Length: 394
Image (cartoon, rainbow, N blue to C red; front, side, top):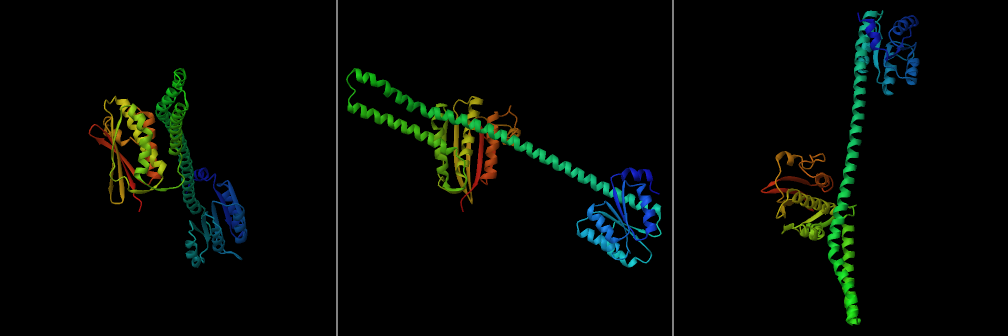
């Protein structure tokens, strides 16, 4: 016989609805069940049972098969149709065999024959309770797992937000540095023109021709400064829709922006782009940002490794429906472990500068998620090569 104490301990949160039109059986069964379960409801008809379950769902329903007005089978059918997922135990007499197949179709969890055998009833209920408790534990585990997944997703979203912010700050710093290099020469030219005015006045050279010539020179330099700011504004403006363009239309503005800065740093850029007019259809400015990130990463590697003759080689080739763009630099090769993790946001900062690896992490995200391509990294002689695959416009 099932141990009553154990049964009581594991059923303290289980609710039972007992339905039988035999008043004597109902009363006796109710007293027995109330000694084990904390919540027991006893009713004497299928209609009452259905109404009771509609007001408050129960974990187990014990139902007599044969009852007037509404049989136990009909009651359970309505409960199932309403979405009730309770365990069902049918109380059956010797003449109820014709209804057993219907009971099986309703996924009955057990059958108890009349007259009631209390020992067998408790054994049946014990097995059912074990199943209910297992499902409850599984649901609880599922909820905890779901909460954990949501927590980790929120944490990753926050980490990505922080990295994006760091990347934006780094990009702003790089932009300011590039602007300062591009502005130095025209500002020096304007300064020289202004300083020459007192000397021109002193030596009687300040005539209409002198003024017109120098005003034109100053206006030219100011126009260059204005265009420089406009170029940077357009470069960092986010795309809203995909565009039709060729690779040269993306690369040329990037090289223009970094040209003076890289030249002052002693960095040479060689471009082998015979197929640069291949048409693309994707997010133009985001592809610009990817190329800029790779160039800036190479520049960081040159400074970090103290490269004497820094060289970046750009190549482009067409193959089938794909376009392959590579950025190769001679800033030192990396270990296989470093290459495997080079695009990860938590990459070891001892192996790679922090702003660099955030830039590479975001670069891979942009290429994979926004541009619909792929990017890989590998060693190539005395440095690292990045290869981007993009889909050509069909």
